[in-house]
Length: 375
Image (cartoon, rainbow, N blue to C red; front, side, top):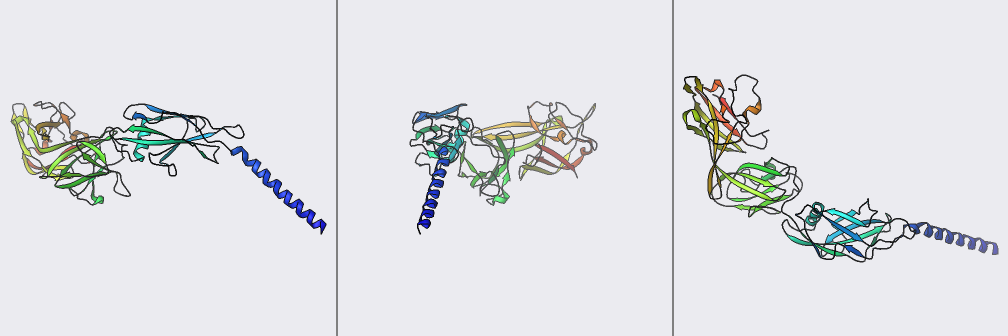
């Protein structure tokens, strides 16, 4: 019996020693919490519209094994307690340094995650976590920064218009696409009618939603359109949240040989204008038959009516005869109102014929273009 008790005692001692060894083996992961936040000062204000950055700095934590400590800077809403932080990022040097240099661009994204609207002022709470990859210690202190978000949003890959006021209605699958015309800008030629419309970043899932309010791009809402149906060019720039709406009141084909407009186009939908069964006859001159033309857009911006001219990228052209005419010949670009410069020329087959004419400013067109089909 005594022998049995001795063996049991040895077993208990062995288990105790293993437990102590395990405790010792984990001690190298123990670190202290960060006790002081040095910068930015509490309630420091940042205007995020500038091209700059914010530097976050704190007192270093201590490791039980005197080794290195890893840091994460953690952000939350002003009312948050970091139980569900909105953003976490390693400090400089992949988490090894006691500083974080954060660009205003990145800080603007964090502000958006906190629900601070574009062109608005709001507050973010921040603190620091210390660890060796496990046994994370949350700092006992936190600070507030106040930020003013600039106009603008991260640019989506695509943009569509939808809603009861849009020409394709409020079925998302039918939303009309914008054309991306720059790194941060989109434009669309479309008709609006009484109702509401908005812009969406995609047709599936949960898209980002944008709308226009007081000529500025806003998020998560819709714009109300009232009055008669009109065709507009809508341009939005996500870099600064600017928007511009130009009414396209009329498009005419200008024929300088006769100093007159041959006909007017009718909007057909989807950024396309058409003119059906129109007669074309060149003007006889002593040197031959003159076939030059370009386009006049009558537009309205606010209370101001003006002209915009579209023509060829070339100052002068030859007739587009033959089977190998490049598609780029027909591309339409903004030009001056000069009587002759930058005119296109009709193909010889058009003379004394009727044609169906089309102008295509849709998102699917490689470039804004036009065509004539001889009847």
